[in-house]
Length: 201
Image 1 (cartoon, rainbow, N blue to C red):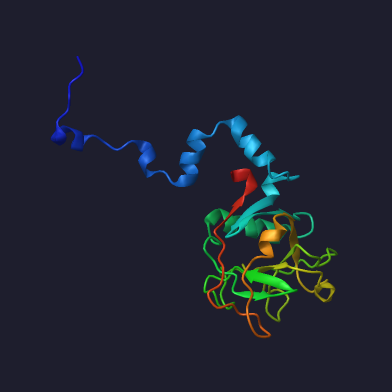
Image 2: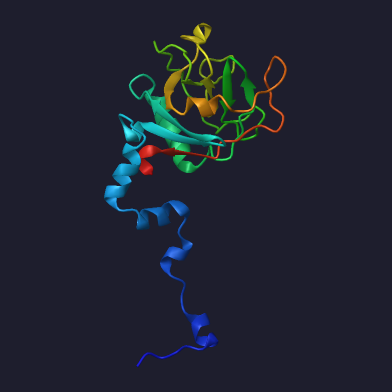
C-alpha cells in the first residue's frame, strides 16, 4: 500500500531534474524528432545550420547566411547567437529608407563582443534585406554589430562584409522604430527579443 507523505517528508523529496533546465532544454524534452523537423521545415530554409530566426516585436524574421562568402563572420555570428549575446539588444541606430543597426551591448553603437573580425568583403550587393557587418573606419574593425538594409544601398558594396539576407519577415524589419537626426539614433529603441540558429530549434 502506498504511503501518504506528510509535509515534512514531502519537503525532503528532491526536485525533478527537469526543474533546473532552461526553456530550450525543456523544449528538447517534449519535442519529438519528427515535430522538430517540421518546425525547421516551416521556415523553408536551404541550410538550417546557416540560418537564423530573429524575433522582433512584430514578428519572426528569417535570415539565411552566406558561409561561402563570409565564413569567419558567419562562424562568429553563430557563436554569439548560441551564447545568447544578441538577446535583448537594441536597434540603436535606425534610418528610414536606409538600414536598422543592432548588436551593441551598450546600446550606443560604441560596444562589441571584444573580438574584431578581419574584413571579408565580397561580391554580394547591398540590397533590400541584406544583412551586413557594421564597422568603424578600420576595415577590420567589425565585431558584433550588424545592420539590415531597408532598401538598396549600392554605395556600401565592397566596403562592408555582407554575411546574410532576410528571406522571410522583412515586413517586420520595416516596422522597427526609426531614429531621428542624420545619425538615426533611436530614443526608447526596439529590441531583439531573441535570435536562434534554426538548426537548434
